[in-house]
Structures are given as structure tokens and as C-alpha cells.
Image 1 (cartoon, rainbow, N blue to C red):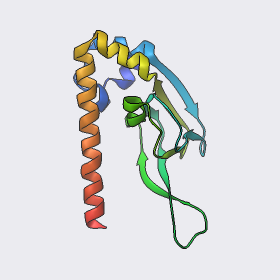
Image 2: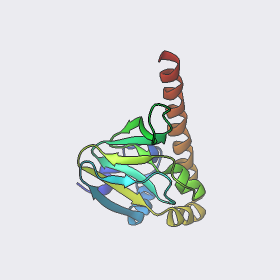
Image 3: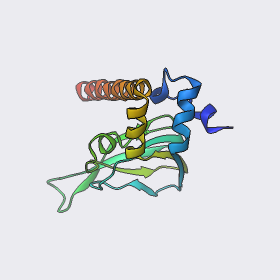
Length: 152
């Protein structure tokens, strides 16, 4: 199956026409990871945006635990096919706030942030749609987190 056919239903690409999807494809680098392999390390500097094609990964953060002499890892979320990560690094070229590890075999698309921003400058409509979609995805994650915190 062509990459365009695999990604056209992903939330991040909602509203893009086939020609706009074609503009994204040359920026995509396919990366494979085995179970327990670290995909992104916490505190790493990055600028790429990632989209999961296959598999699941866990998002963990080091958190100080008073009962433990060293920092412990806290599971923050699990991500699956179609989910994105690396958004803040992509947008701000900043340190990552969590470690992402493959739960099983994982295939991701890695998109170079500089190249993607250049595409956004050349095609404002495409840039607007993707950034709007990223905002909607992050909004849903916040809502999910609020409910998780409220309900214990």
C-alpha cells in the first residue's frame, strides 16, 4: 500500500487534498523500532515531527519519588497508529519532555521540522490545516488528561 493511502485518514492530515498529501510524502522518512527500543529520549534536543504508522509506544517521564533514592519513570500515555509525537520539539526546537519507547514493533514517519516549516511557508493552506489539526489533537489530549485527573 502506498504511503499516501496509509496516512490520508490520520487526524493530522484531515482536510488535506490528495495534491497536498503528495507534497508531504517526500519529507517522510520511515523508521523501524523493535520492542523496548527507545525512539525519543527525555531531554533530547529535536525538531522532528513523528507519526506512528504501526504499533504502540509508551510515553514516560522521570519523576522524583520521595521513597526512592533515584528518579522513577511514570507512564504518562500510550500512543498508537495515527498518533503524533514530538510536537513541541517540532514547533519550538526544544528539549523533549518525555521518553518514548516501543511496546512492540513500531514503524514511524519522521518529518524534518525545518523542511516541514519551509513547506508551510510555500503552501500556507497546507500549513494552516496541519497546525489546526495539531491544535485539535493537543486539545483532545488535554481534555483526556483533565478527565483522567478528575476521575482518579
